[in-house]
Length: 301
Image (cartoon, rainbow, N blue to C red; front, side, top):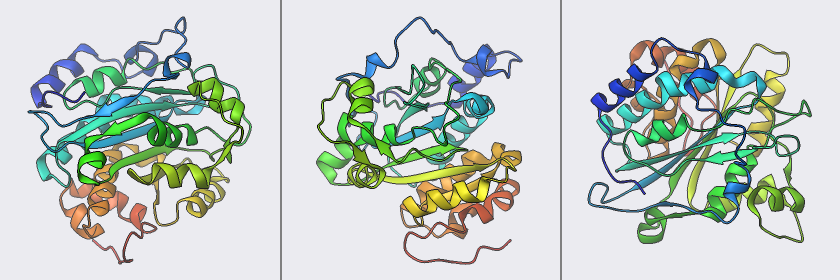
């Protein structure tokens, strides 16, 4: 997959088709009659070089679609994903981005705990995004299944970026909750159809996905008393690769996504932030304070 090119005019037409709607249930083509979970059994997603993308770079954006997160789904569809793509095309921190979106639920309670689009390079990125099913579940059990994306990335994606050039893509998850501690054999069987005698810890999952992808997580600060505890848990797992953004600044998400990818390619945080809207950059500067890929730096405006 990944043919074609992303254009502002295609985005304008697609956004126009949404009209004045901002409600996720109106933007996303929810269809609970299909068994989305079973659709991932045995499925692979491929990011391949083509005439349009001669040096493809896979980017996976995984986002929480449980009950509290409808606003995030709307933000991605109406603003953040398009804006992040435009930053990537304009400033080119990576070559030929091919983007896959994953809707993340809770494999302990949800019928659709993981859904994945194809890797695409054109407006199908967002068209397929809005075809995902927003189950709006979650079990109230202390976490969500962000780790399903790591398993899928490690076991079910094939990329020319890694296979031909031994270069990593990017995998960014976004949400406001803890991650369950690992995946059991039963959960892996139910979601992916794979039979295993042993489960996998999050450390094993991130190590496996990390062979092909630079992994980051964005914690959304909701103003809850649990925010610090959740952030610290992510920092323990993904030390130096966990950022936080306030819910009130969620419209600055594209700038944060772009900054993480730019820093993954070796840019300093201050350099990455100068390439984006400066009003947004000021709001997210502190979000990068815990990102420590090579060296820590002070960010000031």
